[in-house]
Length: 395
Ligand SMILES: Cc1ncc(COP(=O)(O)O)c(C=O)c1O
Figure 1: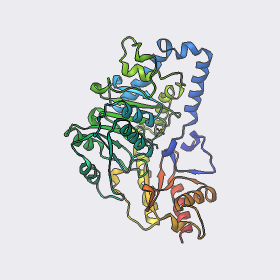
Figure 2: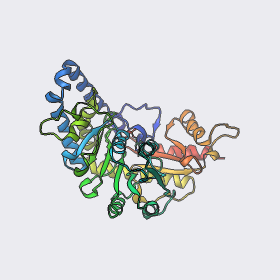
Figure 3: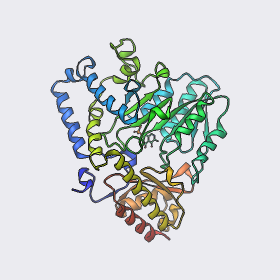
Figure 4: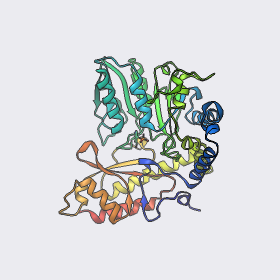
């Protein structure tokens, strides 16, 4: 059986966009359906926190805590990384004039959340301009360093950047920030299942990640780590029962995030099935899967860069399973096309050549970018075909 047969992706499309929303294997979806069936057989027993739900959530919590090397008492659940980022930004006390430092590689939705938190509190958002292409990780540290001021209170930074697919040196960013008494919120939306995470070593103040991207869990499940001394500050985006009804032997932090009103816990409870599935794909477990995806991503980048006669836009050490290539999209669109070049090229690739992958204008301007994801079901031959099609389109 080929790895792709474990997924139900449309076989007529070369799906090179795992990074956007992930894709869930059949066996994990089956597990989720089984969980929903059990829930609907006895909704009260299943969902009432004091009956079955809490122990089930704790089992998942323990597995995620082990995966990211953190204490389970520091891990709450969120629906997604956007939810996790918003919870932190809307909770932490910001004073007028204080600054939240973000980067130009940050995910738009989360940078918007920073803007909103600043508007509500009279704080300000400042932006570090990290170059792309770039030749060293140090460029990230330098860009952030140049924007840190005595007013900087919090840095919001992607672990793996959304548009440019770069692994940012978060451990060094955190050390630099802590040396100046600044907190760091890491948006690790892509990290679980792409990188080996060690939060005990990294020491972020806040770290959020998705289970539904590279871990291949069902959609709407993620975690939020908060270091113990800050947990009293962080509240979920929805305030519910646990605000005034403490649960025995559970912190308010855990119990508030455990219940934010009626929800479907099946995506979360199916995460162990996703973990088992991913671990069993290769004899070397998750470590081998991550390394294989990384090697496939580096090879994909090499194939595309060779075809387009360009140098890779970042050092190899900044690459996980996601690669972004700068491209002048205009050169690949037919003469007379009227739409925006990036959008037009994406549509040509999708509708004329059956590729699903994002082509976009990074920061709304040139160079345009093309982003390729390499998950277990992807093959180098798909990227080789993409390179041939791009060459055939080039004017
Ligand atoms: C860095 C980053 N943060 C947050 C998100 C949003 O993820 P979600 O929609 O699951 O919250 C993404 C999505 O691609 C992302 O790349």
